[in-house]
Image (cartoon, rainbow, N blue to C red; front, side):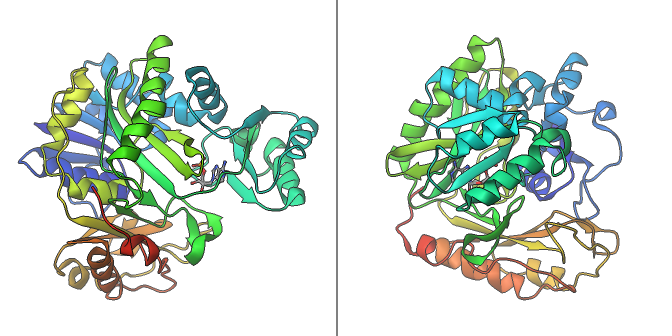
Length: 409
Ligand code: AMP
């Protein structure tokens, strides 16, 4: 099979790596200079048997629809299904309609009404942009004044432009977070191995939200019982609600959850593989991923996902100034030495020509190990060999509380 992966980051590198494994041809468009399969040809002009769309923006803008209209086999929802990620307001309406457990919330365009609703909630306060904001449009704060300021900045368009002109305000939830990525064929949804990602910039979950600073899989608190509960209470009713709206959802339905004392609650849905969750889930996939995604794209999932029992940990290395104003053009050293360590794979998120930094998130260092502590040790050993001016990363990915717990697939 010749598979075309659309996108330019670490997730697409991990996708290409996993899709190529049982002997398939892969191209990545546009990719980046650190991804070996990169081509400049636009997706519409690539000759492929299967198209896998990585990022949310082209999905929301209807790339899957355009490729399907041209007769291509596509893994990724059309613009109708991608609204789950493109509009949090719409997503929340669908969840309520489907009876899926989620945080109490309201959607607003008027600052006075929004702030009046905030005042009815206990802290922490959660304010989200309705539209896409690269994972950065969510404020969680104990301060009512800070939440009210954020509402005003978002609704006025000054902080997130059009994406913030509607806000969703939610009650604050507590508990471990979980990412459950499901492969969907329009009717059925099959869960992949659970992962946990780290959205905040700094150790101890401090600092601003980012696109993601690391991840690990499996997740000790998410055994088969939790996965079964999430499928029955959230994913399957969501698929049914999409179908009821005439939406034939073929792609990844990414359930972002919080495991609260009252049970799992959906925090968000995404319409694609998570980045960096893909970098820990896909290296553990031992089946023919291209076949699985092609079956989903054809509307007839048959293959059952199969997993490497080993654990995977990814540490994201970020450029100076990320996430606000990343500096680019710094020379990177140690890539070959790090990649030569046992169990270690480097995914290129933002590597430019001549191995320089070319984005906010630059390299994803993934390691497989017999258990989470070993995978974590290997990942950080590889990280210690890599350097550039201003490089920064979290030192607490998968550690120690998570990695010492009992591991289940
Ligand atoms: P989202 O983009 O909706 O996934 O939100 C980004 C991050 O903000 C989540 O991964 C959580 O860490 C946090 N968050 C979102 N919604 C809530 C909530 N209702 N309560 C507490 N934290 C939240």
